Structures are given as C-alpha cells and as structure tokens.
Amino acid sequence: MFVLGIDPGLSRCGYGCVEHGRTPRAVAAGVIRTDPALDLPHRLAEVQLELRALISELRPDVVAIERVLFQHNVSTAMGVGMASGLAMAEAVAAGCDVVEYSPNEIKQAVAGSGSAGKHEIGEMVRTLLGLPNVLSPVDAADATAVALCHLARVPGRRARAAVTASQKASAS
Image 1 (cartoon, rainbow, N blue to C red):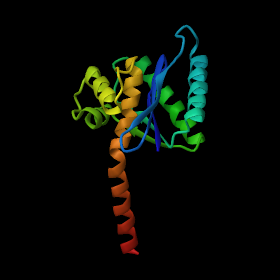
Image 2: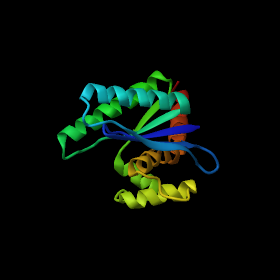
Image 3: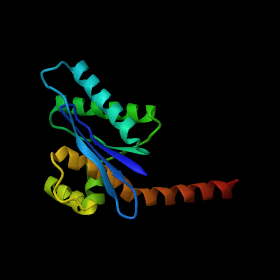
Image 4: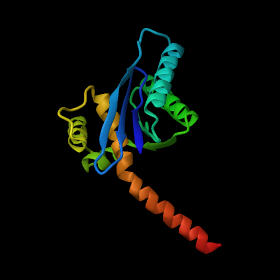
C-alpha cells in the first residue's frame, strides 16, 4: 500500500509518499511551491496540476491530508483550505481513498504526544523511515508524518470495519 500524505498550503504544499511494509519505506517527499506574486486562480491551477502529476506518478492507494482546524490568519486558512480541497478532488478523480487527520492525531501517532513540536515530528519521521537526515523543508516532513499517521491507524480501521460488518451480518 502506498500512502501519499499532504500538508496543504497555497505557498508551500508538502507531500510525502510512504510504502507500507514490515517497516515503512519513504518513496518521495517534497514541496509544491507557488509564486505569491501570481493571482489566486493561477496559483491554484499550479497546485492542482502538480498534485495531479504527483498522484499520477506515485499512484497512491490512499491520500491522507492534514485537516485544517484553526488558523490565526484568515487568508492563510483560506489558501490552506483551497489546497486541501484540490488534493481531495484530485485524489478522488484518480481513484484514491481520501482520509483526513487533525494535527493532534498526526502528532500522537508519529511522536506519541499530541503536543509534539515540529522538531520532534521531523526527528520521528527520520527515525521511523530510517533516513540519514531530517526531511527538509519542514512541510515535506509534516506531509510524510501524515502518511505515517495513516499507516499507524490502518490496523485499527480494518478491525473496526470487520466488527461493523460482523454486527451487520448477525443483525440480518
């Protein structure tokens, strides 16, 4: 299973693809950047085209996206929300499952604490994937943490789905 994690943003949209296995393996990580001097529709089009190309190249089974819960800056929140929507739409159009995780869920799954800082998350991503260095920029590490969060949650989701299916079958 390939999971593409997305840390959405309009100026910097981080991505990290991880392959599920006995130990997770990093496949790709980086950042999609747009020029702040461009107008909003052109920046969104750039993000959309880059996401489409990335999904087409990596062919993830699941696209896991960091959910935006709160931002102090309204214009930043709007850009993050738009980038998140583009990621969801492109993933669904490519036939991928889409899941969202809150920042606290991601931190808890990757670092064991919902209050972990950026440095701790970067170090845990490096450790979990056996990388020689912390991923840079931080948006790439954050996106990879989203993918790792999903992999950590998959067994629980499968178990809950099996219980639900079993309950439905016994109710029939």
